[in-house]
Length: 343
Ligand code: NAI
Image (cartoon, rainbow, N blue to C red):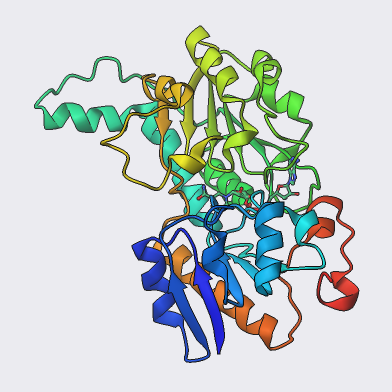
Protein backbone atom coordinates (compact mmCIF):
# COMPACT_ATOMS: atom_id res chain seq x y z
CA UNK A 1 0.00 0.00 0.00
CA UNK A 2 1.39 3.42 -1.00
CA UNK A 3 0.75 6.01 1.71
CA UNK A 4 0.03 9.47 0.31
CA UNK A 5 -0.74 12.74 2.04
CA UNK A 6 -2.23 15.79 0.35
CA UNK A 7 -1.71 19.35 1.58
CA UNK A 8 -3.84 22.46 0.89
CA UNK A 9 -6.78 20.19 0.12
CA UNK A 10 -10.03 21.74 -1.06
CA UNK A 11 -13.35 19.85 -1.25
CA UNK A 12 -13.08 19.63 -5.06
CA UNK A 13 -9.59 18.03 -4.77
CA UNK A 14 -10.78 15.42 -2.30
CA UNK A 15 -13.76 14.59 -4.51
CA UNK A 16 -11.77 14.20 -7.73
CA UNK A 17 -8.99 12.14 -6.10
CA UNK A 18 -11.20 9.87 -4.02
CA UNK A 19 -13.24 9.03 -7.12
CA UNK A 20 -10.11 7.60 -8.80
CA UNK A 21 -8.16 5.99 -5.96
CA UNK A 22 -7.76 2.22 -5.95
CA UNK A 23 -6.94 -0.09 -3.05
CA UNK A 24 -3.19 0.30 -3.74
CA UNK A 25 -3.02 3.92 -2.49
CA UNK A 26 -4.21 5.32 0.83
CA UNK A 27 -4.77 9.07 0.94
CA UNK A 28 -4.97 11.41 3.92
CA UNK A 29 -5.91 15.02 3.26
CA UNK A 30 -4.95 18.15 5.16
CA UNK A 31 -6.41 21.59 4.56
CA UNK A 32 -3.25 23.21 5.87
CA UNK A 33 -0.46 24.14 3.49
CA UNK A 34 2.90 22.45 3.45
CA UNK A 35 5.73 24.56 4.81
CA UNK A 36 8.45 24.29 7.43
CA UNK A 37 5.89 24.58 10.24
CA UNK A 38 3.58 21.82 8.96
CA UNK A 39 6.06 19.41 7.39
CA UNK A 40 5.88 17.15 10.46
CA UNK A 41 2.46 16.01 9.21
CA UNK A 42 4.25 14.23 6.35
CA UNK A 43 6.06 11.79 8.65
CA UNK A 44 5.19 8.19 7.83
CA UNK A 45 4.07 8.84 4.26
CA UNK A 46 5.68 7.75 0.99
CA UNK A 47 4.30 10.56 -1.14
CA UNK A 48 3.45 14.20 -0.52
CA UNK A 49 0.90 15.73 -2.89
CA UNK A 50 1.36 19.50 -3.19
CA UNK A 51 -0.33 22.44 -4.89
CA UNK A 52 0.85 25.87 -6.05
CA UNK A 53 1.14 27.61 -2.68
CA UNK A 54 2.63 24.74 -0.71
CA UNK A 55 6.34 25.31 -0.18
CA UNK A 56 9.06 22.68 -0.52
CA UNK A 57 12.14 24.73 0.32
CA UNK A 58 15.48 23.34 1.49
CA UNK A 59 14.30 22.89 5.07
CA UNK A 60 11.07 21.14 4.07
CA UNK A 61 12.88 18.87 1.60
CA UNK A 62 15.45 17.86 4.20
CA UNK A 63 12.66 16.99 6.67
CA UNK A 64 10.77 15.01 4.02
CA UNK A 65 13.95 13.10 3.19
CA UNK A 66 14.48 12.38 6.87
CA UNK A 67 10.94 11.00 7.14
CA UNK A 68 11.56 8.70 4.17
CA UNK A 69 9.23 10.51 1.77
CA UNK A 70 10.31 9.36 -1.68
CA UNK A 71 8.14 11.40 -3.98
CA UNK A 72 6.67 14.89 -4.20
CA UNK A 73 3.70 14.82 -6.55
CA UNK A 74 2.77 18.32 -7.67
CA UNK A 75 -0.89 18.43 -8.64
CA UNK A 76 -0.16 21.44 -10.88
CA UNK A 77 2.03 22.42 -13.83
CA UNK A 78 4.04 25.29 -12.27
CA UNK A 79 6.98 24.29 -10.07
CA UNK A 80 8.48 27.54 -8.76
CA UNK A 81 7.65 26.50 -5.15
CA UNK A 82 10.21 23.66 -5.11
CA UNK A 83 13.90 23.93 -4.24
CA UNK A 84 15.06 21.54 -6.95
CA UNK A 85 18.71 21.74 -5.97
CA UNK A 86 17.80 20.60 -2.46
CA UNK A 87 15.55 17.83 -3.80
CA UNK A 88 18.03 16.44 -6.33
CA UNK A 89 19.28 13.01 -5.33
CA UNK A 90 16.90 12.88 -2.35
CA UNK A 91 13.25 13.22 -3.27
CA UNK A 92 11.87 12.78 -6.79
CA UNK A 93 9.43 15.43 -8.03
CA UNK A 94 6.66 14.80 -10.54
CA UNK A 95 4.09 17.22 -11.84
CA UNK A 96 1.03 17.40 -14.06
CA UNK A 97 2.47 19.13 -17.12
CA UNK A 98 -0.91 19.75 -18.72
CA UNK A 99 -4.37 19.35 -17.32
CA UNK A 100 -6.31 21.66 -19.51
CA UNK A 101 -4.55 24.46 -21.34
CA UNK A 102 -8.02 25.38 -22.65
CA UNK A 103 -9.30 26.00 -19.11
CA UNK A 104 -6.61 28.64 -18.52
CA UNK A 105 -6.68 30.12 -22.03
CA UNK A 106 -10.49 30.41 -22.04
CA UNK A 107 -10.45 32.00 -18.59
CA UNK A 108 -7.82 34.50 -19.76
CA UNK A 109 -10.05 35.59 -22.61
CA UNK A 110 -12.98 35.69 -20.17
CA UNK A 111 -11.05 38.09 -17.95
CA UNK A 112 -10.08 40.24 -20.92
CA UNK A 113 -13.66 40.53 -22.20
CA UNK A 114 -15.07 41.09 -18.71
CA UNK A 115 -12.65 43.91 -18.04
CA UNK A 116 -12.69 45.45 -21.51
CA UNK A 117 -16.48 45.48 -21.85
CA UNK A 118 -17.13 46.09 -18.10
CA UNK A 119 -19.38 43.02 -17.86
CA UNK A 120 -18.77 42.67 -14.10
CA UNK A 121 -19.89 46.25 -13.56
CA UNK A 122 -22.93 45.89 -15.82
CA UNK A 123 -23.98 42.78 -13.84
CA UNK A 124 -23.93 44.78 -10.62
CA UNK A 125 -25.71 47.77 -12.15
CA UNK A 126 -28.65 45.86 -13.62
CA UNK A 127 -29.15 43.97 -10.35
CA UNK A 128 -29.67 47.39 -8.76
CA UNK A 129 -32.11 48.30 -11.59
CA UNK A 130 -29.51 50.73 -12.91
CA UNK A 131 -29.75 50.34 -16.67
CA UNK A 132 -27.30 53.10 -17.58
CA UNK A 133 -24.38 52.10 -19.81
CA UNK A 134 -22.33 55.24 -19.24
CA UNK A 135 -18.66 54.52 -18.65
CA UNK A 136 -18.79 51.09 -20.29
CA UNK A 137 -17.12 51.99 -23.60
CA UNK A 138 -14.58 49.35 -24.58
CA UNK A 139 -12.77 48.73 -27.87
CA UNK A 140 -13.01 46.04 -30.55
CA UNK A 141 -10.45 43.27 -30.18
CA UNK A 142 -10.72 42.61 -33.91
CA UNK A 143 -7.66 44.12 -35.62
CA UNK A 144 -5.78 44.73 -32.35
CA UNK A 145 -2.43 43.21 -31.45
CA UNK A 146 -2.01 40.67 -28.68
CA UNK A 147 1.47 39.87 -27.38
CA UNK A 148 1.91 36.51 -25.69
CA UNK A 149 4.92 35.79 -23.49
CA UNK A 150 5.40 32.03 -23.24
CA UNK A 151 4.10 30.19 -26.29
CA UNK A 152 3.65 26.76 -24.73
CA UNK A 153 0.40 24.85 -24.35
CA UNK A 154 -1.60 27.64 -22.72
CA UNK A 155 0.00 30.43 -24.76
CA UNK A 156 -0.87 28.61 -27.98
CA UNK A 157 -4.44 27.94 -26.91
CA UNK A 158 -4.78 31.62 -26.06
CA UNK A 159 -3.30 32.71 -29.41
CA UNK A 160 -5.80 30.47 -31.20
CA UNK A 161 -8.66 32.10 -29.30
CA UNK A 162 -7.29 35.56 -30.11
CA UNK A 163 -6.96 34.62 -33.77
CA UNK A 164 -10.64 33.69 -33.68
CA UNK A 165 -11.34 37.26 -32.59
CA UNK A 166 -9.38 38.58 -35.60
CA UNK A 167 -6.42 39.80 -33.54
CA UNK A 168 -2.84 39.93 -34.77
CA UNK A 169 -0.61 37.83 -32.51
CA UNK A 170 3.01 38.37 -31.50
CA UNK A 171 4.79 35.83 -29.30
CA UNK A 172 8.00 35.63 -27.31
CA UNK A 173 9.28 32.31 -26.03
CA UNK A 174 12.71 31.47 -24.68
CA UNK A 175 12.61 28.19 -26.60
CA UNK A 176 10.36 28.97 -29.58
CA UNK A 177 8.88 26.07 -31.50
CA UNK A 178 6.84 25.77 -34.69
CA UNK A 179 3.14 25.52 -35.17
CA UNK A 180 1.86 28.59 -33.40
CA UNK A 181 -0.11 31.07 -35.49
CA UNK A 182 1.82 34.07 -34.17
CA UNK A 183 4.90 36.03 -35.20
CA UNK A 184 7.83 35.36 -32.87
CA UNK A 185 9.76 38.41 -31.69
CA UNK A 186 11.71 39.77 -28.74
CA UNK A 187 9.82 41.05 -25.64
CA UNK A 188 10.65 44.68 -26.55
CA UNK A 189 8.54 44.49 -29.70
CA UNK A 190 5.70 42.92 -27.74
CA UNK A 191 5.89 45.76 -25.23
CA UNK A 192 5.96 48.43 -27.94
CA UNK A 193 3.26 47.11 -30.30
CA UNK A 194 0.73 45.17 -28.22
CA UNK A 195 -2.69 46.42 -27.15
CA UNK A 196 -3.04 43.35 -24.94
CA UNK A 197 -0.12 41.52 -23.28
CA UNK A 198 -0.73 38.08 -21.79
CA UNK A 199 1.78 36.12 -19.69
CA UNK A 200 1.97 32.35 -20.14
CA UNK A 201 5.56 31.42 -19.24
CA UNK A 202 6.72 29.71 -16.07
CA UNK A 203 8.24 31.79 -13.29
CA UNK A 204 12.00 31.30 -13.08
CA UNK A 205 14.84 33.20 -11.43
CA UNK A 206 15.58 35.00 -14.69
CA UNK A 207 12.09 36.30 -15.46
CA UNK A 208 11.16 37.38 -11.91
CA UNK A 209 9.52 40.83 -12.30
CA UNK A 210 9.95 40.79 -16.07
CA UNK A 211 7.04 43.24 -16.21
CA UNK A 212 8.66 46.05 -14.22
CA UNK A 213 8.69 49.84 -14.49
CA UNK A 214 11.16 49.73 -17.42
CA UNK A 215 9.02 47.23 -19.35
CA UNK A 216 5.82 49.16 -18.64
CA UNK A 217 7.46 52.41 -19.81
CA UNK A 218 7.96 50.82 -23.25
CA UNK A 219 4.31 49.76 -23.58
CA UNK A 220 1.52 51.48 -25.48
CA UNK A 221 -0.62 53.85 -23.44
CA UNK A 222 -3.77 52.01 -22.41
CA UNK A 223 -2.27 48.52 -22.70
CA UNK A 224 -4.20 45.65 -21.12
CA UNK A 225 -1.96 43.36 -19.06
CA UNK A 226 -3.20 39.83 -18.36
CA UNK A 227 -1.50 37.47 -15.95
CA UNK A 228 -2.85 33.97 -15.46
CA UNK A 229 0.63 32.48 -15.08
CA UNK A 230 2.54 33.36 -11.90
CA UNK A 231 2.26 36.54 -9.84
CA UNK A 232 5.95 37.38 -9.51
CA UNK A 233 6.33 37.79 -13.26
CA UNK A 234 4.94 41.26 -12.54
CA UNK A 235 6.36 43.86 -10.17
CA UNK A 236 3.03 44.74 -8.54
CA UNK A 237 4.22 48.16 -7.33
CA UNK A 238 5.28 49.08 -10.86
CA UNK A 239 1.93 47.84 -12.18
CA UNK A 240 0.12 49.97 -9.61
CA UNK A 241 2.14 53.02 -10.70
CA UNK A 242 1.30 52.21 -14.33
CA UNK A 243 -2.40 52.00 -13.48
CA UNK A 244 -2.30 55.26 -11.50
CA UNK A 245 -0.51 57.14 -14.27
CA UNK A 246 -2.94 55.85 -16.91
CA UNK A 247 -0.16 54.14 -18.87
CA UNK A 248 -1.77 50.76 -18.17
CA UNK A 249 -5.37 50.68 -19.36
CA UNK A 250 -6.33 47.64 -17.29
CA UNK A 251 -4.88 44.65 -15.51
CA UNK A 252 -6.48 41.22 -15.22
CA UNK A 253 -4.74 39.17 -12.57
CA UNK A 254 -5.57 35.58 -11.69
CA UNK A 255 -2.27 35.37 -9.83
CA UNK A 256 -0.48 37.76 -7.50
CA UNK A 257 3.10 37.71 -6.28
CA UNK A 258 2.13 37.58 -2.61
CA UNK A 259 -0.89 35.33 -3.13
CA UNK A 260 0.28 32.41 -1.01
CA UNK A 261 -1.02 33.83 2.29
CA UNK A 262 -4.19 35.24 0.77
CA UNK A 263 -5.64 33.31 -2.16
CA UNK A 264 -7.88 30.23 -2.03
CA UNK A 265 -9.42 31.05 1.38
CA UNK A 266 -12.36 33.12 2.59
CA UNK A 267 -10.75 36.14 4.25
CA UNK A 268 -13.82 38.36 4.06
CA UNK A 269 -13.90 38.82 7.84
CA UNK A 270 -10.24 39.77 8.07
CA UNK A 271 -8.20 42.92 7.54
CA UNK A 272 -6.22 42.75 4.31
CA UNK A 273 -2.67 43.63 5.35
CA UNK A 274 -1.25 43.66 1.83
CA UNK A 275 -1.52 47.36 0.91
CA UNK A 276 -0.44 46.81 -2.68
CA UNK A 277 -3.17 44.25 -3.30
CA UNK A 278 -5.71 46.42 -1.48
CA UNK A 279 -4.77 49.36 -3.70
CA UNK A 280 -4.93 47.24 -6.85
CA UNK A 281 -8.36 45.93 -5.82
CA UNK A 282 -9.57 49.48 -5.32
CA UNK A 283 -8.83 50.40 -8.95
CA UNK A 284 -11.82 50.36 -11.30
CA UNK A 285 -9.73 48.88 -14.09
CA UNK A 286 -8.12 46.03 -12.17
CA UNK A 287 -9.81 42.64 -12.13
CA UNK A 288 -8.42 40.15 -9.63
CA UNK A 289 -9.44 36.51 -9.35
CA UNK A 290 -8.05 34.01 -6.89
CA UNK A 291 -5.98 31.63 -9.06
CA UNK A 292 -9.04 29.94 -10.51
CA UNK A 293 -8.15 29.84 -14.21
CA UNK A 294 -7.54 26.09 -14.09
CA UNK A 295 -10.78 25.23 -12.32
CA UNK A 296 -12.85 23.17 -14.72
CA UNK A 297 -14.25 19.65 -14.40
CA UNK A 298 -11.93 18.45 -17.14
CA UNK A 299 -8.86 19.93 -15.45
CA UNK A 300 -9.69 18.44 -12.04
CA UNK A 301 -10.22 15.03 -13.60
CA UNK A 302 -6.92 15.26 -15.51
CA UNK A 303 -5.03 16.49 -12.42
CA UNK A 304 -6.24 13.57 -10.32
CA UNK A 305 -5.68 11.02 -13.11
CA UNK A 306 -2.15 12.18 -13.93
CA UNK A 307 -1.10 12.56 -10.28
CA UNK A 308 -2.31 9.07 -9.40
CA UNK A 309 -0.67 7.60 -12.49
CA UNK A 310 2.59 9.48 -11.65
CA UNK A 311 2.52 7.94 -8.16
CA UNK A 312 1.72 4.41 -9.37
CA UNK A 313 4.39 4.65 -12.09
CA UNK A 314 7.04 5.77 -9.62
CA UNK A 315 6.48 2.90 -7.21
CA UNK A 316 6.16 0.37 -10.05
CA UNK A 317 9.64 1.42 -11.26
CA UNK A 318 8.33 2.70 -14.59
CA UNK A 319 9.87 5.52 -16.69
CA UNK A 320 8.87 8.94 -15.37
CA UNK A 321 8.00 11.30 -18.23
CA UNK A 322 6.50 13.82 -15.78
CA UNK A 323 9.48 13.93 -13.45
CA UNK A 324 11.24 17.27 -13.21
CA UNK A 325 14.54 18.22 -11.58
CA UNK A 326 17.05 21.03 -11.27
CA UNK A 327 18.66 20.05 -14.57
CA UNK A 328 15.53 19.79 -16.67
CA UNK A 329 13.78 22.78 -15.09
CA UNK A 330 16.57 25.30 -15.45
CA UNK A 331 19.37 23.96 -17.59
CA UNK A 332 17.69 21.74 -20.14
CA UNK A 333 20.44 19.15 -19.52
CA UNK A 334 18.58 16.41 -17.71
CA UNK A 335 19.82 12.85 -17.99
CA UNK A 336 16.26 11.52 -18.04
CA UNK A 337 16.38 10.79 -21.77
CA UNK A 338 19.02 8.14 -21.10
CA UNK A 339 18.08 6.88 -17.66
CA UNK A 340 14.31 7.43 -17.73
CA UNK A 341 14.51 9.09 -14.32
CA UNK A 342 16.20 12.34 -13.30
CA UNK A 343 18.48 10.56 -10.81
P1 NAI B 1 4.30 25.04 -21.10
O1 NAI B 1 5.51 24.42 -20.50
O2 NAI B 1 3.52 24.28 -22.11
O3 NAI B 1 4.70 26.44 -21.77
C1 NAI B 1 5.54 27.36 -21.17
C2 NAI B 1 6.32 28.05 -22.29
O4 NAI B 1 7.09 29.09 -21.70
C3 NAI B 1 7.28 27.11 -23.00
O5 NAI B 1 7.07 27.20 -24.40
C4 NAI B 1 8.66 27.62 -22.60
O6 NAI B 1 9.60 27.48 -23.64
C5 NAI B 1 8.37 29.07 -22.32
N1 NAI B 1 9.33 29.70 -21.44
C6 NAI B 1 10.10 29.15 -20.47
N2 NAI B 1 10.85 30.10 -19.87
C7 NAI B 1 10.55 31.26 -20.47
C8 NAI B 1 10.98 32.60 -20.31
N3 NAI B 1 11.89 32.92 -19.39
N4 NAI B 1 10.46 33.54 -21.11
C9 NAI B 1 9.54 33.22 -22.05
N5 NAI B 1 9.08 31.99 -22.26
C10 NAI B 1 9.59 31.02 -21.48
O7 NAI B 1 3.39 25.47 -19.87
P2 NAI B 1 1.84 25.83 -19.89
O8 NAI B 1 1.03 24.61 -19.62
O9 NAI B 1 1.53 26.62 -21.10
O10 NAI B 1 1.73 26.75 -18.58
C11 NAI B 1 2.33 28.02 -18.54
C12 NAI B 1 2.24 28.56 -17.12
O11 NAI B 1 0.88 28.80 -16.78
C13 NAI B 1 2.72 27.58 -16.02
O12 NAI B 1 4.13 27.67 -15.85
C14 NAI B 1 2.01 28.08 -14.79
O13 NAI B 1 2.82 29.05 -14.15
C15 NAI B 1 0.76 28.78 -15.37
N6 NAI B 1 -0.49 28.09 -15.01
C16 NAI B 1 -1.47 28.80 -14.37
C17 NAI B 1 -2.68 28.22 -14.03
C18 NAI B 1 -3.79 28.98 -13.38
O14 NAI B 1 -4.76 28.37 -12.88
N7 NAI B 1 -3.74 30.30 -13.32
C19 NAI B 1 -2.91 26.79 -14.32
C20 NAI B 1 -1.85 26.15 -15.07
C21 NAI B 1 -0.66 26.78 -15.38
